Amino acid sequence: MAEKQTLDFLWKCSLSLSSETQTERMLKSYYITTCRKLAKRNVQLPTNTFGWGQMCARCGNQWSDGNYDLRLKSISIAETPKRLRQVAKLEEVQQKGQDAPTLSRGAKKRAKWLKKRMASNMIVDCSLCRHKTMLPLEKPKKKRQQTEVEVEQKTIESKDVAAVNKSKKKKKGKKNPQSHPNPTVQKGKTKATPPPPPPPSKTQKKNALLQLAAQLKAHASKDTGKTPQNRLQAFLK
Image 1 (tube, rainbow, N blue to C red):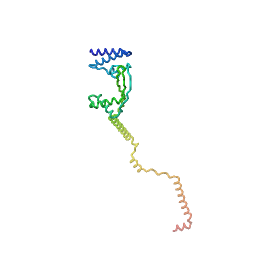
Image 2 (cartoon, helix red, strand yellow):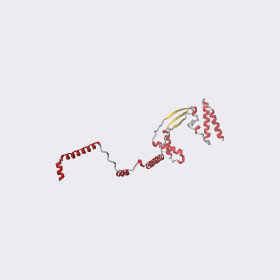
Image 3 (cartoon, rainbow, N blue to C red):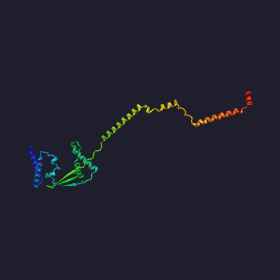
Image 4 (tube, one colour):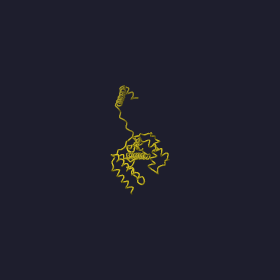
């Protein structure tokens, strides 16, 4: 309890001071460093307040006061698939802990070394102690591609939809048999009842009349050629 009270007291003292003069900045740094030293034994300080992104790791100079200089350090090693896989294995081990697959000591060192050099870093130079703090600038991770399970589920759903559509089409065909008549029945019907002959055309009618007129003319000529004597002789015979 006594340590927590002293930590709270030192932290409140550091917050009450401003960073306008050099003496205030030095006192503030002294209170924060002593607070850190006391907390190393039993108390765990919050990283969102005492982390590297909030203050200097050596003197405790808070970045919110503005006493620093910034420099950008670009990537020194190109990203390759093999290196990215090594870094991904290290991150998996750090996240899962005991459940993750184990990595050898050399593989961990190599992955950490690659992770530092494959990312752009922001160098923060402290104006009080001239200590350099490296803050990594991580790129936003890309969205993961669809897993095999999701692809299989989509294929199964599409197959189910296709099967339902086929069954609906079959039911519609059964309900409306007239829309798809049986060709064999039609053939039988045509044989039993042949279609009526087509009506004669005008030319056919003219030809028939001409033939009838020629026959009548020939018959009349035969009748006129017979004289009464010939008729009598033919009768006597």
